[in-house]
Structure formats: structure tokens, C-alpha cells
Length: 418
Image 1 (cartoon, one colour):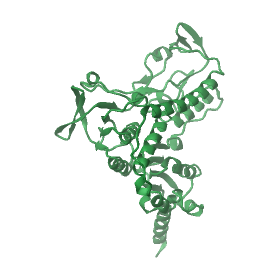
Image 2 (image 1 turned 120 degrees about the vertical axis):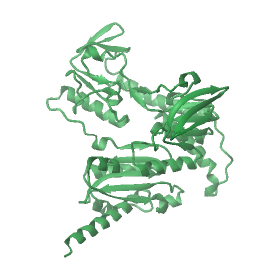
Image 3 (image 1 turned 30 degrees about the horizontal axis):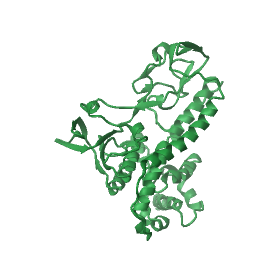
Image 4 (image 1 turned 135 degrees about the horizontal axis):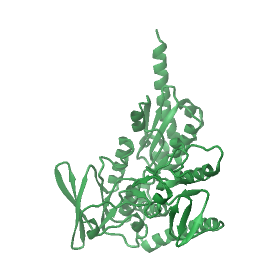
């Protein structure tokens, strides 16, 4: 939520800057960072106060906790025993050991969210959701921004066409995007910071006033006494079974602290509720990430994905057909000047929808139609029979569905034709 409030400020600045495209004459936007950050703090404080009130309705022990045995934790010298435990300590920012980085100095996403003065220029290390969102935020509020990503694409876990569309959008915003790099070292030269990196056999560098390290997060498991608790874990997090139970039968775990966590808030909430229920249930429920792993990136255009991707299908040997449709051919998108991106739909040979990816305006909201279709195991014919209001962004879902329906029907007719 903190980043989303800041992204809204950046979005408004961008709209004002381009108001002339819609025939509205406006002066160039000024940015009052104190007010931008002040608005964010007020909004987040209201959320925090509400959550704190809920938590404090339960017996609450504040302090640093660590296990002393499988059934006891110590909190600042006080022993607390329990029948069951849920470990939900979350994650912390991962800062890799890049030579010279610590000496040169850098900021993390926590720091960016509190900056009341933005650097004139910044190099962003990383190309995941946080890196992309906050790189665009910094750029739109005036920082000359460069992204240096180790993987071959941004959003390295997603399909290449999704990553390519986002890269094109960020570059249209004036952000330099460099991918397929190896980070070599960092040095300081006066007030400037220099990131040296390799691309293929060539060594290059990026110079800026600040370095923003956005190279992921890791499970926050340091000093929890997990060995004393008999809880198996690695650096990537705590190991659990399908019921979110750890190797200690009395302890469950949920959220970013898990090994290979999705690091999504709604997933952590789902896991927390499921872990608490399973801890005391006679019949436990296995966690299923099929739909829970739906996700969004709040750049502009937004990215949202539900169900299987083409990469998933290829890795699992699932036969599928796919169709895409661009926003620049959709009436509502053209009328509102939000034509970047596309929607892609994947279906099985029987027409059942397997997954949907959207790069485009309001993708994080539009994806919920896909989630509903996946939940009810809907098919491409269902999309065509459902009413879609016109003109809306949501009706873009009908175009790849129609193409898939025609293709599958044609293939079925070809099979039965003597």
C-alpha cells in the first residue's frame, strides 16, 4: 500500500505533463515531495491504526522472540509455551555481496518510500515488480533513471511477450533498460556512484547520484532459534508440507518466511488463515496456489496474470492454444489514450481457459474476470456468451476468446470431415 499511494502521485504528474494530448492546457507539474510523502504517511497510518486495534484485541507480547525448544519461545527473557505456533515473520530486503556496494552507499525500497527529496539520477539494480514500479515512480517525478537487470528480461519469471511489452512502456517513459548483465563492482567518484557491469564479453558502466538496490527479498529467519524448535529450513526460508506444517508437528508457517514464497500479500493472508485452521483441524486442507498465485505489477501499463502462463504449460507438457489482442485496437482504450499492451488467453483443446495475461490499463482489476472464469473452470465459449458492456476496457477479453473459439471449432470440424 505505501508504494501504491506514491505511484498515484507519479501517475497524476504524468497525466498533467501530457494533458495537452487531450486538448487541456496545463503548466508543467511541480512536485512537492514533502506533500507526496505526507499523503502516503497519513493514508498508511490509518490502515496501520486499524490493524493494530484488531491485533491488540488479543493477548499481545511485544519483543524479539526465539524458540528455546519445540514448544516454547522466549521473548525478551520471558518464556511463552503453546500447543501450536504459526511462524509468520515475513521477509527482509536482500542485498547481495557486490564489491564496493556497501562503501559506495545505496538505498532500498524502504528508503525510496520515505524519500522527501529525490536524486537527480538513479541506477536501479533489479528488474522485478518492485524495481519496475519504483523506477517508474522515480522517473515520472523527475529522476533520470536507468535499470540494470541481471536476467535477459524484466519480470524474469513471466512470459517473454509480457516482459517485452513492459520494457517498451518503461522506455517510452524515458527509462534506460539494460538486461542480461552481470554485476561486477560499484565505486564512488566524488558525489557520483558508478555501477560496473558486463554484457556478454563487454564491460560497461552506469553513473548516477544514487543506487537503488531492488534485487529481491529473503525470508526473515535469522535468530529465531529454528534449530532448537526442530524446524527445517534453508537460507531461502522454512520448509513446510502441503498443509503448511513444518518438521516440528506443533509449528506451522505462512507468508514470505516460506521457502520459495510467492511474496504476495493475498497469498500470505490465505496461508496464514489456512495454517491457523490446519493447526487445530481434525481434517486439514492442502494449500493450492493454482488461483492464489494470480498477481499484478502496478506499473503503467499494469501487468496482471492468472492461471497458467505459456512457460508453465511448456514446463509441464500441457497442450494449449493461445491468442492475443492489443489494446491499441480497442475502442475504449483508444478514446482514453491507454493503448499500450495486450491481453493473452490460453486454452486447452477442449476450450477450457488455462490462463490469462494482461499488460494494459487497469490490468489489476480486469484480471478478476479471468480469475472468476478459472475458478468456475469456464471456457472460451462462456466468455463469448457473457455480456460485456460497450465501450469498456473489459470487453477486450472477448477478442482472444473469439479467436480461440473459432480456431478450436475449425480444428474440430477438420477432424470429423471425411
